[in-house]
Length: 134
Image (cartoon, helix red, strand yellow):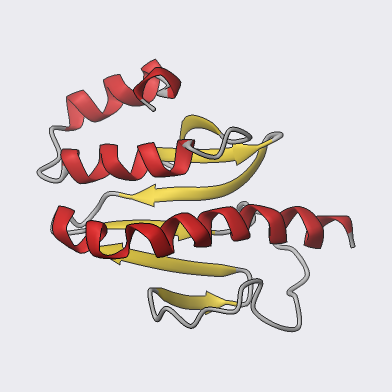
């Protein structure tokens, strides 16, 4: 997936010298498997959008962990009545029905949940697209 990396994001991360850089790149790889997503820097972090619609952002601080934030952008939107995903994995911490976090403390933690995260990312994109059409 490195061929899909945005050079600006790579430079940003190189300058950041984050202790979990390998984990961050693994997350970038899995997110960019979704061919529809574009990587950029937003909110001082790697961000992923679909047709300029922000859906996923990495939270890099505190340095002890990396979080994947699933959202529908920064503007306030009407809340869905239920969570956008049914989540039996316990991987997501829900902040609202359209906002959740997945937290990874290290590479091993990520590898344990990699398949589930891939599924969540794919379903998140689908549900955000469907819900935006309502």
